[in-house]
Length: 412
Ligand SMILES: [Zn+2]
Image 1: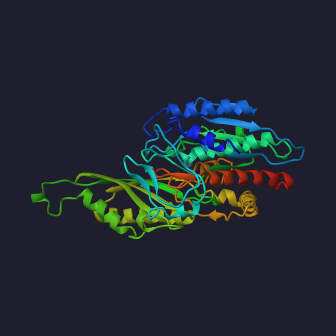
Image 2: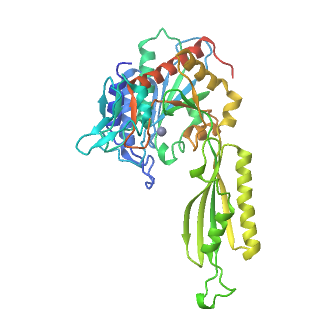
């Protein structure tokens, strides 16, 4: 456990921002650099079957040390950090025995993590807080996950008296740009189920995410000189606005939360002649997502009735689904985490993810995969922070889960 902080600080020193515009796998070289460093560390620790693919997927195995039939679980974290904020030359700042005041991240640039903006800081008095210097992100998302998993494995190797089944670990690239499972070999990984260690504050436990679809809309107008347009012009831009006006006003990201789904217009461009609109459609309930897709299609049909067939053309494509439907049949994998937390006095914070996760994709590839906390706050921000004690709590929860599994292996 002592080396948890050192590990975390060493991983955040490598710039591993992923890059959406790259066609390489992984999208950036820094991720491979970190993967190689981790592979060497796992090798020194004595892990088996360490495998790093050219695409930047690092997997390794901790062999079982018990004769009992214990399920094989997988632990997954991602190597990359968000491209939204710089991850170059991260200079972590340590605030030991936090005093509950505003945190001055950078006195020169006057960058301050303020209690009034982040009241959750109050919960960390007396702990060791880690931030960046305010000019970059910290990278706790998800280098905390990496450090937690490596520390857990090191602990198990140092304490062979703790019985455990086979444990598979995977460190994956390009999660932040939605490519984190493109080359994940689920069959080769061979775990019965897995957990991504990629969540926020202590207790966070997620096994529900959006069902997602994307709609690409093309509108064909007719342009004539505005002076002679009477009953002849069809303005594609006006039709686009009409379509948006037909959609429920409150079903937009800025007016929804929790389990409320939405239509999100994220691209609108065009001229009188032609216009394009892109929507993403989200809902935790799959049949509700289907209703939203049908509703959009109905709106488009009515515009085509009004302006002529083929005026508005739409392509709707499903993107990903709510992992809950894959988790429910094996719900003991969530209960295992809840029980471990309860025994450690941690209240599980179960909340629906308003997005997708690598775990959701893996769940549909046959590897059920809820998400567990790392302890971090303000991911993808220069105000990202995490406490050492939170990361330690994550290690403890995982350790307890592994112990519980060895004592009374659940039957799948
Ligand atoms: Zn993450």
